[in-house]
Image (cartoon, rainbow, N blue to C red; front, side, top):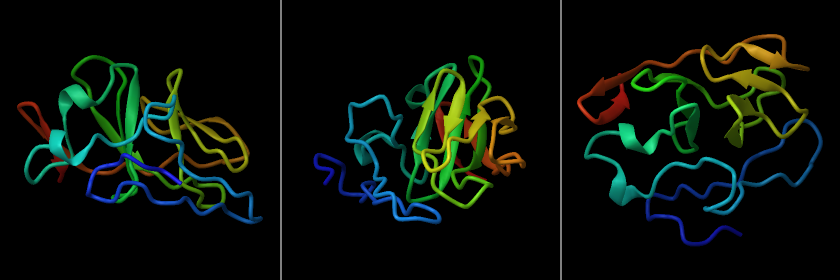
Length: 137
């Protein structure tokens, strides 16, 4: 059980695709990049630009979106559902968006497949960056 997550209910159990693997989100403070607490997100937006690490990303479970910052000031957004079997991705590490179910990895620059079994890129999502705020477009 995840505790200490903001009132926005960001602690949602992930549903494993296929077999019941018991995969759930990791607690805040782990290597998994989770959405910031509700208090740090701008009104009407998802996050502040400072909340998205350069060379990494943040997963917004409720919106089923992952926002990355491949290079400073460049923000990208992708579906947080793996194209292999629909599992939710759970971490962004070492320039990759990782799916725990079957080991697929996607590049933070463009969502393309870096490691299968997925064969299709994560679909791009539309976001809007205005000043230091990121919101859905």
